[in-house]
Amino acid sequence: MSLVLGLDIGTTSTIGILIELPARVLATASFPVNLNSPHAGWAEEDPEEWWANVCRIVPELLSKSGRGADEISAIGVSGMLPAVVLLDKDDRLIRPSIQQSDGRCGVEIDEMRAEIDEAAFIKRAGNGVNQQLVDAKMRWIACHEQENHARVATVFGSYDFINWRLTGEKAIEQNWVLEAGLVDVKATVSIRSWPA
Image (cartoon, rainbow, N blue to C red):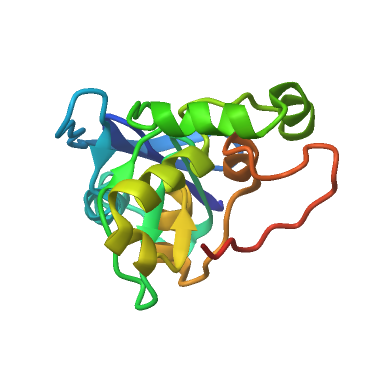
């Protein structure tokens, strides 16, 4: 029987599950993640910790189940969104991720609200102007971390980062882009990557 590996890049832990299709759970595993708040209202994590957890979870699931990696026919990765993960041109992490619950960009949100018609934005993007928007976080970085902003070559979400580490392919999951307020929800789009 085919196996499906599920990974969840959560705010407090990385979780894995191995399922024998159609619905038999063979094994689960979980490792904690450090949520850092270097300043009041900030929420950051180290994406390399997510990856290290995945590298521990997969062998543990296979060991618990007694099954081989060659039996896995599909991998599904989910996670918190829209976390912001930034890579430079050499695919190195620039800084810790800025999590969806991070509240540092209040000024940038006010600027956005002054610049756009929020009702029209909600109608178009399906999301209000709030702290979860990638644009607000990127504006904050441009203002407060100019050197980091100048190095940005790739902007990912949490599970996009893990998918890239698993496959070597840079792609953005469409739900991340929708939650981030980056597309017209009425448009039919095919999103493969979003360079900064």
